[in-house]
Amino acid sequence: MSATKIIDRHLAALRSAARPIVPEDDIFRAFEKVRVELWEVGLLADGKYLDRIDCHRAMLPTFESHFGYVYDERTPWLHKLLGFRAGDIYVPLNAPVRPRTPGSTLLDTVRHEFGHSWAWLDRSFVDGPWFREAFGGSYDDDWGAAPDFDADDHVSPYACNVRPAEDFCETFMTFLRCRRSLHRFDARRGVRRKLRAVARAVATAAKTRVPSVRGPRR
Image (spheres, rainbow, N blue to C red):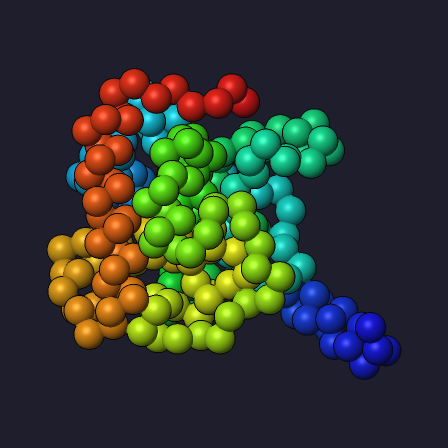
């Protein structure tokens, strides 16, 4: 890496660290609103399925542009010692949320991360044949290089990522936010196809998975 790129990276990290702290009450309100959405679509019931997932403001800031994250079975050992729990949602102290920018709001951050939590909780279902057919690979696949953004096929630029998992989570986020008006995506054939796949998966999980799946041990 050139000296210029190293300097630019450090400057970006300093700017990120200087962002304002996200109020914990705002995170809690966003989390509760998304929980209501999940209850409405059937992915959350009292003590069952995605009701197991909690949301926290992380103890540390992000020095990049991370809005949130979910640890799965690869949780770093030091973070486990610090109390991080697999499957839960963490929003950095200085997450770069933007209240009026779809995809970058606190609500959309929690919606997106719930997609990762769902995959942690019920990997065998989420990463089933329907996922590979809709998103072109398995949840853990890594393309090595991000494909070119195509608005017809990707719901957002971030969905156009090196990992199908991010395409799925961006689509899941959009499904929750726009579930009553998905017809607005009819002109974007690839996006429409993925949203319909997610909608079918949600309906199937609500009927067959929520009552019985306990999820992995933490």
